[in-house]
Length: 292
Image 1 (cartoon, rainbow, N blue to C red):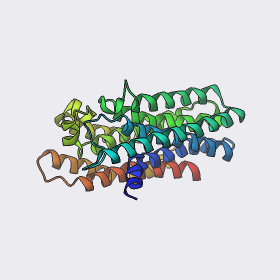
Image 2: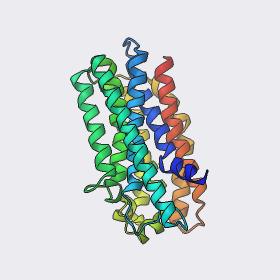
Image 3: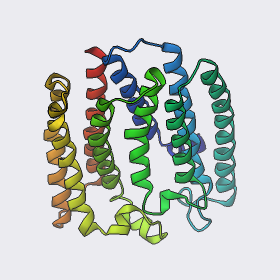
């Protein structure tokens, strides 16, 4: 049972949930613009992206260097079992992806959607696999943010419409900034471990002294961009619900700044707060576009 629990942890369920949300957001934007619903294409596309991201997460564990333990106080047998299971699940997932790809092509897929699909695959491979392995290069957080907040909604949107729209970009930019702030905050609790094993996360690459103001800037930029969306002709009624989450975002900035000043860090609370800000903002945007 413990081994299955570790495999579940390695699969990064939070990332998968965020991916499902942002994919649904892209479909919701298309629906808001009056595009015809296609439940089969939606389901195939959702399954495709989740089964791309699952092996991406598991293969980051499979290719972890030998000097980095997968779990605390692991034995050789446990490590080998976990690596083998992660690899086998990844191969099985990619096999299903190949089948879903065939169905997507049979249903007709636009060249624009195909372009974003290729970008998603390339980003996932570059993030997890050597020689790039962006997860430990300092660019992993940026890659994952662009993948979740920009590429997945764009793929979902173009899967239904076959073209891009300014509303898609207007949502993707602030959401990418907020997602990057989320991953930056999530890297603070693992700073010592990352430094110990020489994992070059974004936090380690730029240093915590620069990371804290960057985090604040990203969060504030996201909400400024949301506030500017009516200037692009996007109704205020679509955007205002995200500002219900702004008090939590401001408190996240305050909490991070207190840690920078030397306060005793409560990492679990920081993680919960950052997850709440990004998760609820994405959820509210998704629901708003679906119901209007």
